[in-house]
Length: 478
Image (cartoon, rainbow, N blue to C red; front, side, top):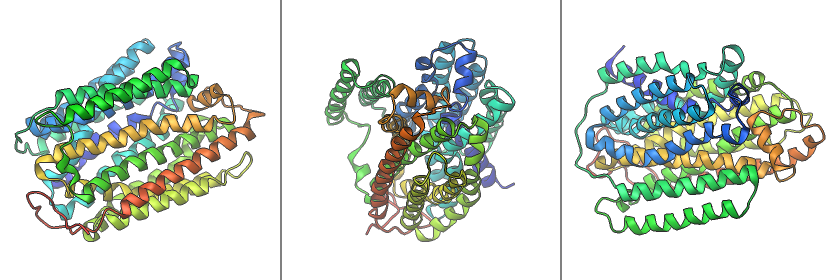
């Protein structure tokens, strides 16, 4: 195995662990809730605290990698994630598990915010697409794969092993990272503590209010959180105009390719991960399938995505990102149209076919789009660009959860949709036909969001991959 292959292995394993654990507890949630004797309104935060910490943490951990070298932050992230995983598996109460999930998420944020920059540091622009093809298996595709693993491990081994399994894998990845990732050079930079604090507080307030809406509906308590979050965002914008090293330097948006690629990732995450949540709700709530059998129906897409990702990454190296990324989004849109034909009694083969198209679309979009971000980022902003990309994608993931439940519950009581998502309620009976209305509405809105991502991806402009980057940008824009 060459040094490059070992470096790619370290990256793949690390990002795979972090992304998988974003969703692996979804199908294990009912079992965890019962075993730890916790109310559903509390146990749902096992999922949400992880997404929230990553969304906030990735804002500055990429820049911290610039200051202390990305190898240190990335390797430390693997260690923190592995330690947090062991603690999660040993949790005795629901409060302990939520707290340990936050620790685990800190490690995942350190990994995610620096992995793209490590690729940019170690591979020239005309070879990064192939590498991102491998690591794409561990990003958003890994988040969806977590749903499958959650069902399998919970059914046959036990919920604690969805965390314990990370310990030997994390130890292996840590050793590989220390040995084969280059230390890299430190880049003179400064953390934006005021900006990070205000943005983090805004995300926490808005996320907490939005998540409460999914379970309790819109009331004065939730409105206060949302309004407070909006006020803090305004304060964040003001702060960013005053600090010497802002969280988001405006020159990061000078490249149209870079800007449009980042926002395409946001809308893709917001629109498509909601679809994954909706399909799980359909399989468990309307069709009454167990977590294990639900996961089996989604498995083909992940297998296809894992096989094709590196191949489409190579294609990106040759022709640039716009065509494969845009085509991937269009194919994801086709999979949503396939899912929209589902009914209370339709064949489950529809889910298999939809999953197959999902795998093809994701294997085209993720490596191409991730590669476009790093290929068109100024070298001194590699860490920031990598972190901002993951921040936007993770905010989209969190928003997709809120959107999926809120829209799906338009035709049934909110608590019913909430319990279906958590896997507590799997026999809707007379509610089934009404719930399908909400599911179709959610799918159509997700499709409209994917269309926005397609437009952004197509409008990013042409790029030319070169063997060595220029000081400021690697691409010519159309």
